[in-house]
Length: 486
Image (cartoon, rainbow, N blue to C red):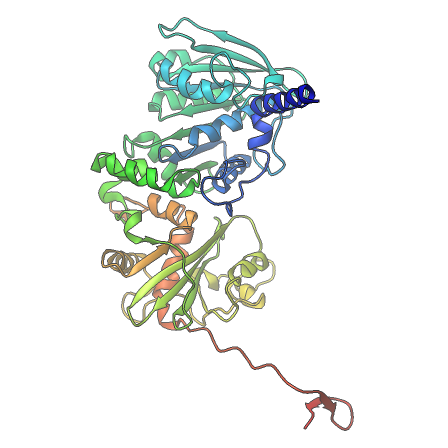
């Protein structure tokens, strides 16, 4: 009996080690688990990043150190190589064997990072993201560095053999020419000429590029290619910091943060490129983030909504402590491709009594129904303010006055954001100027927040609960209405 139990446990351990893709990425991560719980599952930002591949051939995950950016891309490439996708997956899929390249800065980086994620430790291939049962062959190359993989052959579930080749930026542009590929994964930022070659390799097959890196080089050409991209061009970028990775030890995060050189600290902790004077809100996340708390009943509340006509719709939920003149952003919302009824329901989650500020384009009428956008939201139960967001003076509804006043509140400690709002901090980190002008892209939540902030004078406190009726009712003569029994 003991021998049988030992064999069963050994087999369970083997399957756990050699089927990582199915076990650790098969479901979303439970964010209600306390810190220290084994990280089994995909974080919500990883799911968003993967699912964005359905409509975006170019994706960039710009992240802090140790949050799991290489882990994320490694898991996705294993999915494309094997054909096995999690149930939650809404991103790009292939129902055939694929061919792709993985790019790294050097042979050492290829071996220690990308190769490790896909295959596992040397001598233990199958313990990485590619399941043992799917591995066919691993070939090495002579690179002046030991144990550097050149190609990986993988069995695809639909039949056929997927091919993955390892490349480095130090090989130069010529080594990146000639092939027709389904996908390219670039781990750490490449030179622009390497990136354009990767684009060329995937153009004929209508393939995709995934870029994962920590932006220590600042906003150079490749970064700007993403963060300045116009909506609808199929170019997606997201930003992830330490607060988005629950597996990191809070005490260790604080120790490491203080160990980083001051000029690198914000980038390594938040994954933000060093935008310098180009950032709209050049203030550290730590200076404005606070743990969530229950909003006191005497705080005035107001929401802001950005309708999302040709971009995601978004909302921001603000509470105003008028005694201390301090603004708290306690929740936010962003979702693409949904109808007004869906967005209105999402915006009512903290109470349909809260007024909602909206932009000038809410006066635009739907081509089909002829109903103004603001009225569509109002018809679905959202309490819309009578007028679009504006200041009551010469500042009007211009963007700059609102942004300047918000930043002044931040600098003086009167603007706080709950540290659980990943989407808010992501937009804040990438919100920037070009030639002195704010780039109005991927600023959906920022815009919704600004509308609410501009109209905070119309915020209201939670109304008292209506007393419940007591006693039975009796009919009025005629039976047409009812009144309370005396």
